[in-house]
Every structure is written in C-alpha cells, then in structure tokens.
Length: 507
Image (tube, rainbow, N blue to C red; front, top):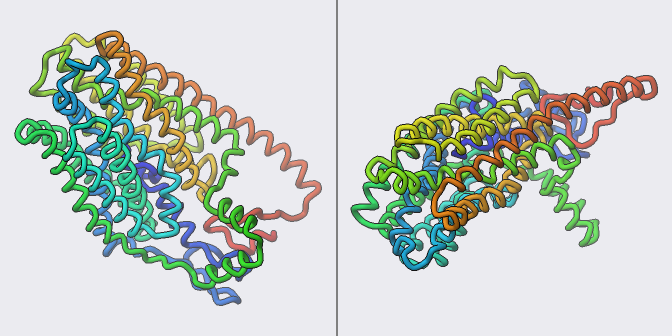
C-alpha cells in the first residue's frame, strides 16, 4: 500500500530520493565559493575550486539497487497489507474470543502498531539516513525487523507481540524502507521515474501472492512457524541493504567548516543550530501545507480498517474461508496498477490542481467503505476491493508531487517526513476503534461505516487547498508589483534551488 511513498512525479516512489539527490548535488557550504553554480550540467569549477555537479550513472550497479529496493518494499508492505490473514490466525491462536469479548479490539493493535510505527519513525529515520548513510540505516532497520518477526514466533502473549511485532517490526520496517527510496536518487536522475516504477511494479510481485501464501502456510505449519518464514524475508533484506553503496561522499571541507563554526559557539547555540539543521519547522508556516497535512491526517483515521478487517468480515458474513485471501490480492493488484498510471496522470495536471486526485480518491474510498456492509454476496466485496486498491494507488503516488508544489524541492523530503509522522497517530488508532465497535455491536457494519466518514471529511478539507493557494498567489502578485517599484535587487534567503546559478541571485 505504501511501498512507493515518498514518490516521484512519474512513478510516485522517489520524491524523497529526488530531494536527497538534489541536496547531495549542492555545492560547498555557505561562505565557501558562493559564486559557483550549485547545479546544472556542465558547470565549471568556480574560483574556490568547486567540482562540477555530480551526474548519476543512470544505470549500471543502480539496477542492483533497484532490485534490493523492490524486495524491501514488497516484503515490508506485503506483510503489513496481509495482516488480515495474520489477524485471523492470531485470534484462532488465542481461542477466538471465547473467553475475552474484547479480543477483536486487542488483536487489532498488533497490526496497527506495526503500520503506525512505520510512519511515526519517518522524521527520525531521515536524520539517521543523513548521519549514518542509507546502507547502515537500512541494514540496521532490516535487522531489527528480522528480530521482531522471529521473536514473535516464540510467544503466544498478545501483549508481548505488541512489542515484538508492533514496535520492533514496525520500527525496523521504517528504518529499512525510507533509505530504499533515498538511495535511488544517488544512481538515477533522468531515469528516476522509471527506476521507481520498476521498484513499485516488482514489489507487487512479492506483495500480491503473499496473502495466498500466508493462508496456505498458516494452515500447514501454524502461526509461530509462519512468523519464522516471514522473518526470512527480512533476513534476506539485511544482505540486500548492503548494496546501497553511496556514491555521493560528503565534502570534507564543508564538514570541517561546519565544525569550526560550531566550535566558536556556546553549547546552547550548538544544540539549537543542530536542531534547526535537522528539523526544518519553517514548512509549517505555510498555510496550504498545514491545511493539506491536517486533511491527510484526518482522512487516514479509517484508512486501514478495510485492509485489516475484510478477511474476518467475509468469514463471519458469508462463511467464506477458502477464498477470502482473494480480497487482499485484488487490493494489491489494482493498487499497483493505480500507482503505475497515476504518476503519469499527475504529470498532465498543472500545479496544485493535482490535489483533486487525492480528493476524488478519498471521497471514493469513504463511499466504498460504507458500501461494504450493503454487499449481498462475496462477489460484490471483490468488486469493491478492486476499486479500493485503485484509490489506494492514486492517493499514495500523488503525495510527493503535491509536497513539491507546496514547499518546493529543497524542503519536500522533510515535508513528507513530517506528514507521515502526523499520519501515524490516526492511522494507528483507526483499526482498534473499528475493533471496539465490532465488539460493542457484534458485527463489522458499524466499523465500516465509521471507516468511511474520515476519508470523506478529509477530502472536503483537501479541496480547499488549491483555493487558498490561488488566493495567496494573487496576494503575492500584488505585493510583488508594489515591491518592484521600491526594491532594486532580490535577496536570496538560504540556499539556492537546484539549477539556479548563483550569478542570478544578485540580479
């Protein structure tokens, strides 16, 4: 479901990667050769001897990295999206609620914690990636996820699995997932959309058959051994993460320059400087970003409810226990299709008008969730799942391009990280609330009705963003028209955007 976020414009999976690549391509730090171009092909070294901007190889060993990233995304989100199968197995392992009427609510926290931690840790993962590099961060995350899955097989306690599966596997997945997107920007620029498209399409080859595989393996060997089999996927990812070889080494001069500047400051000033360096809170000053982030966080409150509860629902409603895995396969297949085509559609929509793709996706998602209890047959649920997958694909793919439009390329990476962090709490809480409603009413109808309300509200909030943006642009045009009468030169605040020569900053 989230195996391509952050994404590029073309394929939805490399917006963060593109931002990282652009940040790595920047020239020396401020004060060290400020007159040289920061980006652009064929830039000549400036007076301080700055090297020409880095050009990615656009292939070669990068295709090995693409394979490793595809395995990472397919494994992590294949397991999370297939939690509906694990959810049923967990309840069977605990006695299927005969002694505890609140078992639905308690069991739902296992999968919700895992998915929520992937988003909650995203801002922190971006800092580790900057400091330790993609390879070390990803290998460390895959190791933690492996330990979490493996240790889940040695206990039957639901509370212990909150920690082993929910916390350890969730945190490890976050640390393994984000570097797999960032590293693509080291090897691709012109073909970044193609690389992300291949990662997304290839990862579907893993995530699509996984529900069927879990259904067959779970019956044959039980839940404990199923966790051990899943841990093998993350064990392989540990070694694949070692292929994330960085080819943009940090500048020694800028590192020493930064250390010299920090050495002349007090401890308090150094701490504040480092905090501002890694936590760019200025993006929250943008009104459009605040509205967008609030709308997304609201919409995802019920986002995971269909993924977590559909399998159990069709077992109770239609007594369908042999083909229930088809629902998750349908969602995965159409989600992959939606991701592949929505990026290209988004490129054809100018500016922030592409946010209406998210508006339509969330609106349909809410309506489809409310239609699930109205289905009179298993086939009707399959049709709804096909459209649910398309909505999922369109929503996730278009997120990074919208972030680029709202805050610009230099701040898009942190903007997406903060957004994912804001999404963590409602996304984690949605499924347990649905489980509580099921325990209270004795059926899943109220849970699916509840799941449909937040996406509809979120879509209405998101529809306001382009209108507010247009109003702000008109105000800026009026102000700039007045300023041109008074100001003779433009002052550049902060670093230059990629492709903007420093010589233009003084025009």
